[in-house]
Figure 1 (cartoon, one colour):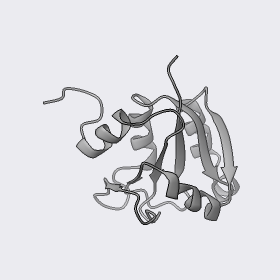
Figure 2 (cartoon, helix red, strand yellow; figure 1 turned 30 degrees about the horizontal axis):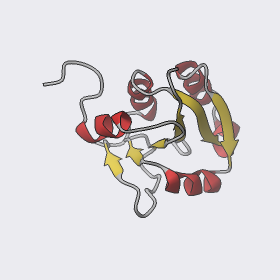
Figure 3 (cartoon, rainbow, N blue to C red; figure 1 turned 135 degrees about the horizontal axis):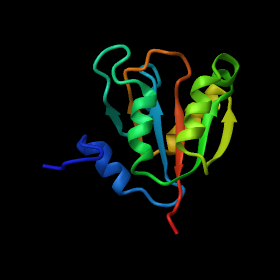
Figure 4 (tube, helix red, strand yellow; figure 1 turned 180 degrees about the horizontal axis):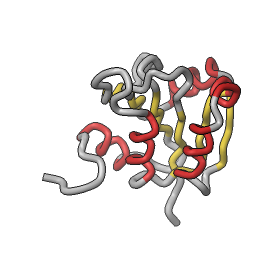
Length: 131
């Protein structure tokens, strides 16, 4: 049994298989997974797990060069964007409309569905390289 890091098999396998510029979406409970994109469903109930908690776990294992959030999130909440920037301090931050973010999700290796029940609490992570 794995002792530390991400224990959820599909998420651990997805991260291990990611290459430079591959995308991983961490979304709230309402974000749809586009057709053909695997959905790694971690939601247990509303609020469990929180999107930011999942992002923290991913930050420990995935090198990220860019993160994308929705304009709508920026208009409603300063805390989450700041927390994401703190988790990925070297990543370029991009923002798009929520509809554009959903279209971008179609290129993702997977959409991770959390129990987050706060609107627009979604992020698209672009993998970087460690060298």
